[in-house]
Length: 93
Image (tube, rainbow, N blue to C red):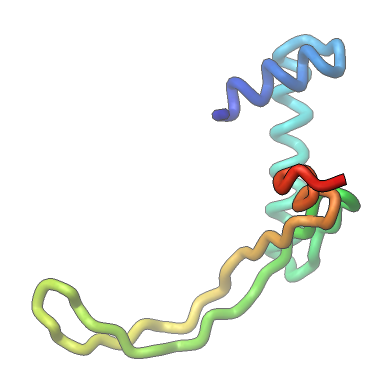
């Protein structure tokens, strides 16, 4: 499912126009991105939690040349699925 499919599904389920559903989904994504960028986590009960994490600096290897390279530390985004979501995917009650 891509964003257009998601917009269509939300518009149908919520009885909204496609443009309104697109605005809502865009605002939701934008709000989550802003919160995680600030270092906050966004918890949607039953769905999951979006948060930021840190990846330490490490050494790696260039697969083409075999040369050792340094990989810089970086921030990363984490998503942890909620229990209800995991149970639904695993078809548990």
